[in-house]
Image (tube, rainbow over all chains, first blue to last red; front, side):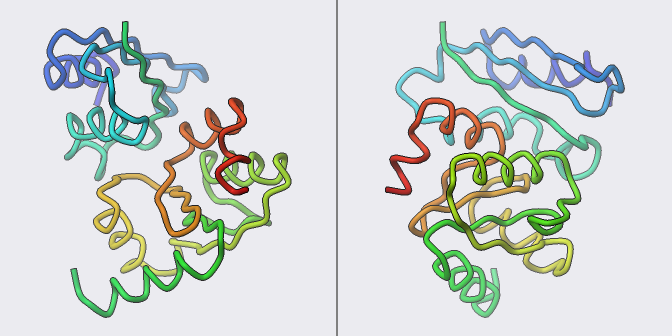
Amino acid sequence: MTIPEIQKKIEEGLPGSKVEILDPYRDGVHIKAVVTYNGFVGKGLIEQHRMVYATLKEELKEEIHALALETRSE
Amino acid sequence: MEQELKVKIESLIKSEKVFLFMKGTPEMPQCGFSAGVVSTLKQQGISFGSFNVLSDMKIREGIKEYTNWPTIPQLYINGEFVGGHDITVQMAQSGELKKKVG
């Protein structure tokens, strides 16, 4: 799965969110998603991460090796 | 989820105040995120028990279902799920982690 595909999946799953994907090691594998989404307001960190994970349910089983997450609201 | 598996997972979680499901062992982590949580806990001076999910496929899959959390490592404090790598690091930085351990 490519980085733009991951970005698209999260953005579609959380409408209105802004998603930035970082690839700090430039290996396309150990990636980090920074997700800004108003729907996170009032939710704890666990719930915020669960919401992002839910958009990548299938991919996390196999294709995505390592995804770091940072979640914030505007 | 099988009752037997659930009981096993719950007894692990409750076996220590701070408990970590990880890939590998604290001495030899097998994944960068597991290594990250171990070093965070050590830096904070927090002692913990751990289970190597690579040694048991049933627990490896079961723990994801049990907590509704798709990735490992998973950290528990006082029997309560705290989060994965990113949340643990964030809580350590804010001082919240130490407070939670008490």
